[in-house]
Image (tube, rainbow, N blue to C red; front, side, top):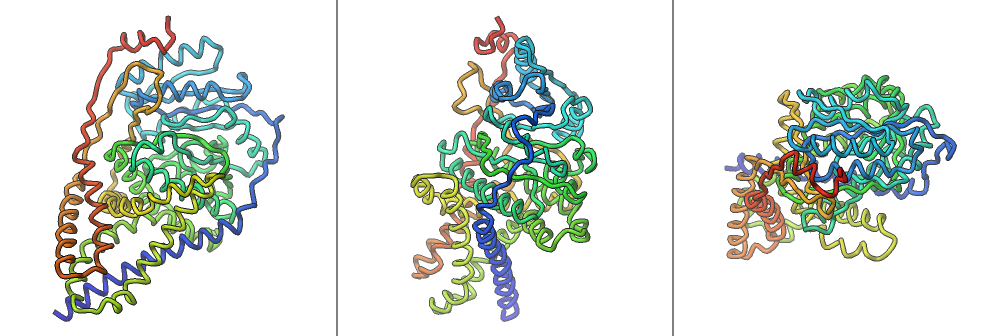
Length: 503
């Protein structure tokens, strides 16, 4: 029994220590951010620098948003004779028909626009970008996923940085069209804000590598080719390419003030699918590039930041183990005085809570120029619970990335919320993950533990039990009640839609 106690508590405190290291790193990122906050990048080019640009729109079954995307790109403030638009359409549903109709309409209006439709989807998004790159006319390519809506001044603001011949890519800052839709979208927005406000800014301005985020950005075509091109041995082709380019000596520029709105998934299964893809892809990039990064001539600061970025999702494995051990650890220390528990466990939990609260809370302050950011602070506890609730989903993704060769790219469907241009909609169904049932099981276990703790007056344990219960219950129950179905439309119905202007 004594050996069992030592093993359980040893693992328990080891996990808390590792999680606290990542918490300390969040505080370090905050320090670096405020140190470099005013060091805004300055372009070498000006308004007279107008190279040929190709906009690539990689699309797969995005009927609800693709017309909005194409319309936004045609409104970019850039000379028509310097702008080419590629719609890289791998769709297998009526999105293809809608793309054909929309492209034909804008072609009649004088735009250099065309679609490339593939049948086999080899390499998924990376394969589509690779295919499009073979025929681009532009010296630079801008990329937008289907749910993004770039402002007209995007190219005018981004292109001048490419006057510096060492710049490989430009990354803009994601913002959110439907942040206020639900608790889920509010929390997602804050999660992404922390990454785009602090991590990208710090890594760029402190001369560390940072990752291209796959959309809302631009690339120099020659840099893509020099880095080895788009490769599809990972499902985060964006991080893979950006790290390979920086290892070759190219640099990226992150523009925190270049805001590009996008739609957040409102269905929890779509959200989990998206998070799963990102976590799995980063694990694949670790397998592929982390040894090379450590052996490279990059600075120690760069190597450490690459490590923290790529391994962040591995913490979910620790959260799963912590979830398993939390109740046994409480039982094994049943007679321990509260003040002793506060001295042993308290600093670990306080550090992580403090780092999360400051990190994501301050990200909201940095994004707004008024007091409105304070109203978002109430979502921070929900963010913590969501992090717990994702643990099984993300752990499965990390293990698949490390130990399987599965490269299937599962896109995140969007509903076009707030976009009323089309009379028709398709609700894309997202399969429920098997982890949903593990989440439900652990929600039940933590619920029982809450009642037991109340019965025995173990008040110090309640906040942590409630946090874990809320996370697993929210994820599992929302996943189970999701009822989105698939609706189909004929090509004639699409062409008859009054918004398409095909009279």
